[in-house]
Length: 212
Image (cartoon, rainbow, N blue to C red):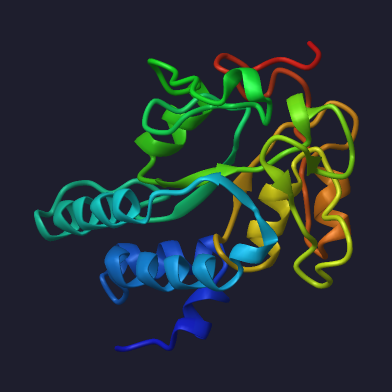
């Protein structure tokens, strides 16, 4: 079955996962639709790091695993956006500050590694309020992120780039950090839902800390 890009970008993570595991949708087809959407909404400045070719490579590998009959994880082929204060080995982790512009961690944060082990694809690293300390994502070093419903308005913060990317349907979900509403506030600003788990529920290893 062939899907229109608009239909693909509108899928929830669980809907996409079911289609990807069954083979009704390929990871490459899904990734291409999301890459096209990312290019369309580039004016939101939702990403600090985005490598479309790397996303395509990961998607092809996901399809190869399915064709080979390998056991597939619950997030098989699902592209996720990661706030840029969470370590990734394949993309820089800047925390939105000039001093870390070229910081390249050796290892993934544990939460990222667990997502990748479950089959997820690293789609890109999201813009944020510098050092996750603010509520606008007006970032002087990497530019301001914009609200997907009104480019004259902020997306909230500090996880503003992640909220903008999810609510502009570039990715079905993303991972942020939240000390004092930094996930919940921008998702509310952008018309989505942000969930903050209890402290300690998910591992904090590999996060650039704003607060314990």
